[in-house]
Length: 112
Image (tube, rainbow, N blue to C red; front, side, top):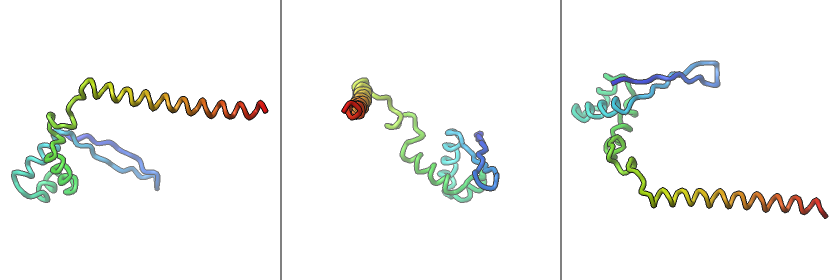
């Protein structure tokens, strides 16, 4: 159960804020420990984490976000991937068309 820490500097008073990033395994173990004991506050204090974070992790755990077989993690079918690719291509083509329309309008005003 290891944690990763990254320092982020704040824009005011040249102070540094420390932000801790927790691994997926750490979050799962913390939630399982809280489920066993039934008390979020004591587990959070013991692990030196915020109670609100542990509560959020517990809700995510219940929703299946840390489960590899959850619906959010499933791979897209080839049809879904093709549909996404085509929608992106259509969006880019419309954007290019609109840019060209504006360019033609600008250049035709200069010819008059």
